Length: 389
Image 1 (spheres, one colour):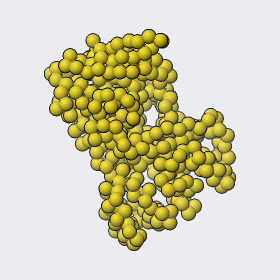
Image 2 (cartoon, one colour):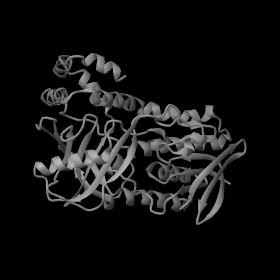
Image 3 (cartoon, helix red, strand yellow):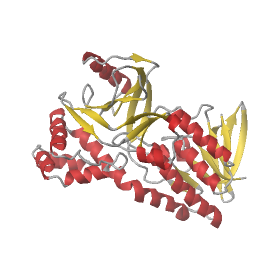
Image 4 (cartoon, rainbow, N blue to C red):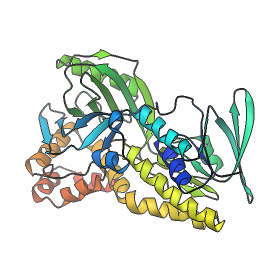
C-alpha cells in the first residue's frame, strides 16, 4: 500500500508527488497518457515562478519584459519594464522533468493508467485503473486528484466541480513578426474574449484566445483580423481547443482526498494561467498530507487545513479576478477602450504590477482618483460592478 496515490501528472500532480517523495512518503503518480505534459497551454509563467521552482534554462524559450495591448478601437498601449516579467517555457519538457525528479526521489511513475473508479473506506483508498488491456488496483492511504477540471472522479470523491467555464483555442505558428507579447482586448474578438500572440522562440509563437464563445469560430475570426492588419505567419500544427475553469471550487477536500490545480479551479480567471498556482497548491497539499499521514488522521476536518492554506494565499486573487472577468464581459467595446486608456494615462500600469497576483492591480485601480473618475462616468457601471460580485 502506498502512502499517497496522485492521479494526473501535470504540474500540480507531479509537484505534489515530488514534494511527498522528498518527505519520505511512498507515492504512486498515475497518468492516463504516456506523453505527459503536452496539454494545450501558453506555457507562460512569471519570473518568480521560474526562479522559485528552479525551471532549468534549457526549458526557457522566451523572456518578456512587457507587452503591447491592442484596444477595441485599435489604439495600442505599450507596457515596458526594465526587468523580465514572464517566461515562455517548454511545458511538455518541464512537466516530464518534474515527474522524472519525483521518480528519482522514490515515487513510482505509472503512465498509461486510466483510472476508472476510486473506492474510499476507513482503511484507505482503492484505485482501479486500466492499462494495456488489463485492470490494476492500486491501494493507498490517501489520494490527490490532479486530473483537470470536470473530471468524473471529483464527483465520486464528493468534491465540488468548478462551475464557471471558459473556452480556449491556440495554434502554434512560425513567424518573423512576433518580437513581443501582443494582447488583443476585444480586437477582432467577441465580448467575452481576449486574445494573444505569445512568442515562444526566435521565429515561433502561439496565437490563442480565451472567452465564453465557441472557440473554433472565434479563432477563425481572430486570425482573419490579424491577417488583415498585415500579420504574417505559417501554422505549424492544427488549432487545439480546451476548457478552462474560471472560478475556484467551493470544496477541494474530502475524506482521504485533496484536489490540486484545475481540479480545484486554482487558475487565474483573468488570463487562464494556472501553472504557478497549481504548483504552490501542490506544496500545501503535500504539507497537509504529510501531517495527516503522521497522525493517521484523514478526516475532512484535518484535510480542510489544505483548503484554508491555499485560499489564504490565493483566495483574494481568485475572487477579485473573477469579479474583474465578469465586469469585463459586461462592458461595451467603447467603455472598455475608455477604461484601458484611463488606466494607461493615470499611471495605473506604471511601476510594478504582479504577474501572478492580479488583486494588487485591482486594489491599485480602486485607489486611483483619475481612473475611478473615468469609471464612475460610465452609465450603469455601479450596477455592473455589483453583478460581478
